[in-house]
Image 1: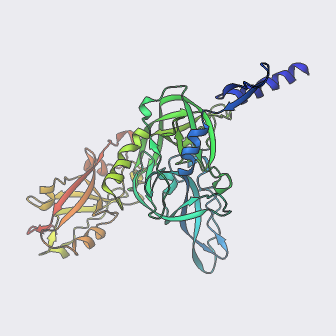
Image 2: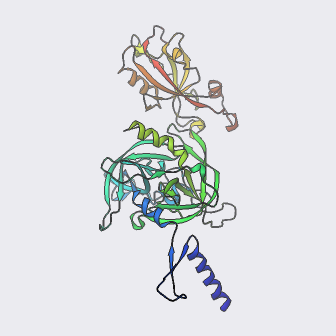
Image 3: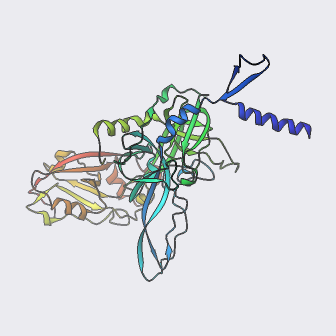
Length: 446
């Protein structure tokens, strides 16, 4: 018993003394043996400086329900997105289960609080957070817990800039008047440096929670698989800061600060277990280095941004539209890619419209569109059918410019002709942004 008791006491003392500074203050009027012990923390001043600049971010979404059974959005940001058992949580919106019955008589629409996260004020009215905290929101709200008030004060906000791959976003609330934090230099971090994490785990219940640890490792390569807005699967690898400071659901988008009160990172995800052993893992969290997020922050603050197929089952019907004869056209012959085509369902190619031919001397040829390109976006509108392109062109006149995004991979036309395709046969491609100046094209494919 004595050994066990001493062991517990030693642990308690170590936990109390870590990171503390003991100052001995001698009272000159007292006897020599009388000494006052003042214990101060190296974190106190930094926390007092920045804690008030860490806010909550509420993500509201519209859901449909019928017969009193609503669609569930259970624990929207649990483990910072997908994940949970077996690996890193994060990247993605992490919807829960619990969809209600669809056999109700009448369908209704309702706005719900889909999830909450954290954010840090980086400019007047501007808040830095994770993209997955604001993803798919129909309305965003910043929440600030003020001293002496039971209920938090909320501010309407809008998404002004984001980088989905990096998982960072900036939102703007014009009425928010909190002091911006100082941005540090994450390249100067060393393993063993203090890491102070501040955020709102479990929403308003634990607003402004502070946890402290060290920088456990630098340059950790963390990969995740996503589907982009056009339906193509992609693997993203980001370099992160590893820390053992406790971070939990709701901490996403908060701040990892130095003892000087400088923002060094953005808590984003944590490791929750091993897929091989089933062991529970604690103390492995990841933060996006602030230097990686600085370009998007600086763009916003400096520019005052206010918004940033088949013949068989595989190809598709020819949808060349002769109704545009005598009207401005791009000058392409296209096919609609069947959304149930296996390559689309697997995310190996995006949804869109396949370019079969490009007319000689046409605006499309001049712009650089090639046979085999897949048109996925026109004038910031996602394209899944040729009719959507025609609808946009009908509103234009000769000389108007279309912003066209295509997905380009070598040998796409030949690939689409094959009856059987293995995943390893699908070449990797890239998105290309082009500008097409519309003109009258005499030659029209019939």
